[in-house]
Length: 415
Image 1 (cartoon, rainbow, N blue to C red):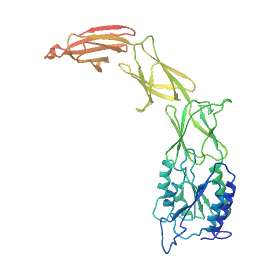
Image 2 (image 1 turned 180 degrees about the vertical axis):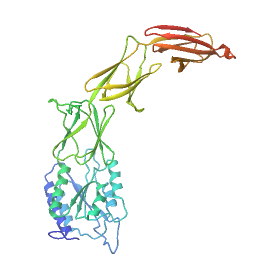
Image 3 (image 1 turned 60 degrees about the vertical axis):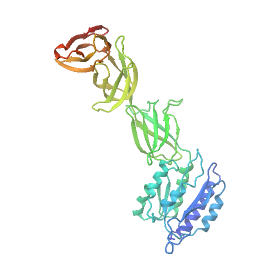
């Protein structure tokens, strides 16, 4: 009921909405609907916090019907934004390939104790609606921040601003928007490619798109079609992954998103012939205990440029610190060829295998208590087996066997 430049806010808003509806008449594959609130019960006489209605449902060519209903509306009641948003979720007909967009126009804040932010978040997380547009019509400054959590907020302080904002919102909702992701090398050039990228809705956390990055026929990052309504968090699934938060796209233009993703390669190979079956290496960022990747022997894998610590699951394990991965370079790490130790015994018993380091025994594994023969694949070095038969009840019957393993050699140990 407030006054604007040329009359009541209500009348001005309805007139400008009517013009916007006229501009939508020729748009293919676009349907509109109208939901209102606070239109039947008077605020002072019978305050009603469920006073909302879908007055014109979605259908083709219903623009004039909406304009007619707009002309009949009179502001009477309270402001029930949360409940109206919740009800609006049911207004959209079932459709797998549709973009469900809500434009909320209000000159007041929630007055019924609801939580519009929580409702909007829940609807977005369920994928029922995209991030809503909120047009504040002459709102007080202190109220503006209460709407930013609901969706994309636009402040229309006067008639001309309202008309501009309405045009911007409709443009963002309808216009085709493209983007390219530049995966930048160490020199800042977009040369990295062939890695998966996930776009998440920054507001709701919902997964929106997955693309495997590609270069087009001109050697440039490929063009993507992405909805401009959403603000995104981009995760580039390099090793380790790269995250870029709060990406805002400009509707109707080509957007370029730059991400630092310089990579090099690590090749793990075995010296000579080996007896390893599916040997793996744990790869961690230098100084961290978090596992980034388990890389197989005799494979090459890409990593972000930097230094890494490796734990190779040989027996005994090999630790290599500060492996340097450089831009577009393959770092090769060669693992010594192992040897074979065949352990046999006449009786069941208790035994363990140790490696000698600096005159200290370091445990490697326990021998089987029941198997009479075992084969162990070991790295070159000095070893000791300590064993006692099950039937021997005195410790004096403990047996020690010292032996050395060389690359490619075979040693037989009889207990």
